[in-house]
Image 1: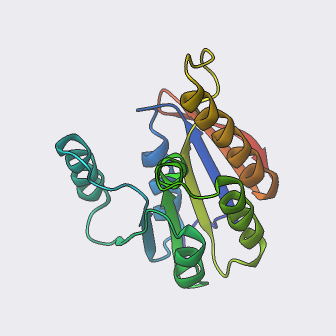
Image 2: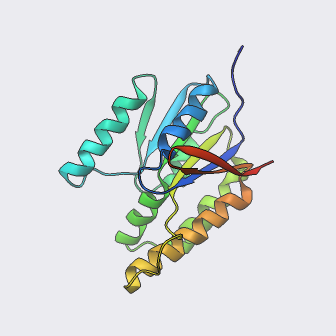
Length: 177
């Protein structure tokens, strides 16, 4: 395919809220000229989240096939990652929140996700909120979430061939192997 940009087997795109991380991840997938699959971890629990989901779908357009999977990310990746697709997972922090709310063993889930990365059959781009750059949260639940997110990001970044931090819409390469 002329003009196609190849994707790393695993890419992690981090950024703050409204940093442009999802748009950057979508652009990476689209530049690969590979049929895109979007694994959505968000659930429309209220009108605001439903509106956000609708905006994301509209921005991506009809070329993207969407798979809604709030918790079984390992299973969804096993089904969807292939040499004939490029998968975008948006986002890991919502996945983490879903796991915590369901009372799941977060460390085991992180280990499970980390454990399948090397065996994925096609490229995957993960999007996640970098939540560890601010002040220490004032309550135990928020601190636990931040700590789990930090461990999750480290586990994915360790195995990723590409890690990008998006700030104010500008991607900064953290790791490129």
